[in-house]
Length: 341
Figure 1 (cartoon, helix red, strand yellow):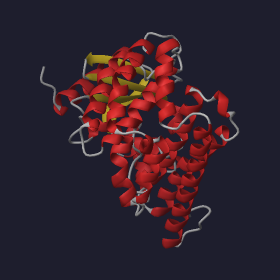
Figure 2 (cartoon, rainbow, N blue to C red; figure 1 turned 90 degrees about the horizontal axis):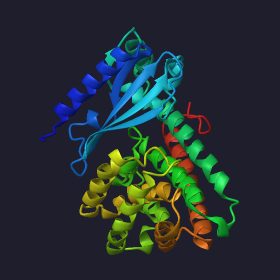
Figure 3 (cartoon, rainbow, N blue to C red; figure 1 turned 45 degrees about the horizontal axis):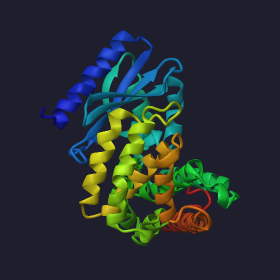
């Protein structure tokens, strides 16, 4: 089956219209994510990110629907009330960009134009004051998560704790990314970050971010050896109750082929983020050998015991450096360093 961006866009439109026809609670639907780009594929795979806006609070926030082994629908649902103050969306580091330039797929009432016009009013969205506001909001989330892991007992570090560490790092990395564009999603995080760090005038932050994940402790051959254990853990975790919704059978090729492509590309260590992130989510519901294989891997990355404490301290310095960078941007633009306004 030949799949193109155009055929995926057609599926998105047909899905939106069909779902809206059968559910009168749906106010609007729009497309976001990689399919908005000219080349959305990574490793020959892609997802179709559709957001449905509901009048009332939706019972299910997210859903994955398999189309083929390489393509799936990633459906998110939001309540209309989330958009009741469009001007405030300007300062939202995620929803602001989501609504800034998506593709409208369906509209039952005049919703989309009003929200987007308010968001774009005055051409201020991409100006330093609002950029800094979104960046500071993003970094504040990362700092808050970092605070939660500073007092952890080294002997009790497991998937939950490492997942929190990665979430804090994820927000910190995306703070730098948002200085020059929208946030980067998990699969492409370290693949696209070097260009974003360079655009922010901080190319040295690329090495710092990779180091905080533990890349200087392993080589490519080691990561390739982990691949089969990662895949087994992912497949087994898909069947376990309570696993994170992103560990879904429809997404196996989506991650697997992307990881393989990055391992063979110009930035091979970029593959470590999606591999370790999904492996850690899988490990939360696994035990026995499958858990031990994950534990051995994070141990080699220096993310257990005293290594975890050292990494948390390194993350503290990384966040500090980003805060200094935001202050520099504020000064260069004649803005208040504390508010960016």
